[in-house]
Amino acid sequence: MSGPGVGVLMFVAHRAIEQRILVALREAGFDDATMAQGRLFARIGEDGTRLTDLAEMAQVTKQTASFLVDQLERGGYVERVADPRDARARLVRIAPRGRQAQALAAVAEREVYAEWEAHLGARDMARLRTLMERLREVTDPWAALDPTD
Image (cartoon, rainbow, N blue to C red; front, side, top):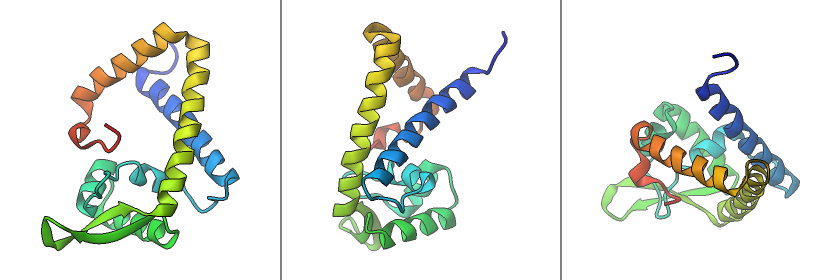
C-alpha cells in the first residue's frame, strides 16, 4: 500500500477541522485562542472537569494543562470553581465567553462536515461516522466522560 497511513489521514482531517475552527474564532474576535488551548477546552465537561482529568484526557502533563487553563482563564474562556462533590478539589468550567466561542466553533465544525458530506455523499459520511465511533471504543478510554455526548 502506498501513500500515507490511516493514522496520518485521520490526523490531516482533524487538523483541517481545527484550522477552520481557529480561523472562524479569530474572524469573530476570539484572536487569543490557540489550538493547544482548544484541544484542552474541548474536553471540559458540561458541569466542569478536574484539571488532573483534563491533563490525562488531553494527554499532557498536569503542568501543561495548568498553564493552558491559566491562559484560558485570563482570556475569560473558563473559570475555576469549587467541586461540589469534594470541597478540597476545584473544577475547570466553561465561562460565558467560552460558551460564545464554543457556539462559533460548533458552527464552523458543522460547515466542514457539510462540505465533507457534499464530497463523500451522505451514505459514506454516515458510514465514516459509524466507523469512527466504533474505533473510539478501543482508542479512547475517556469516551464515557465525553462532554459532547
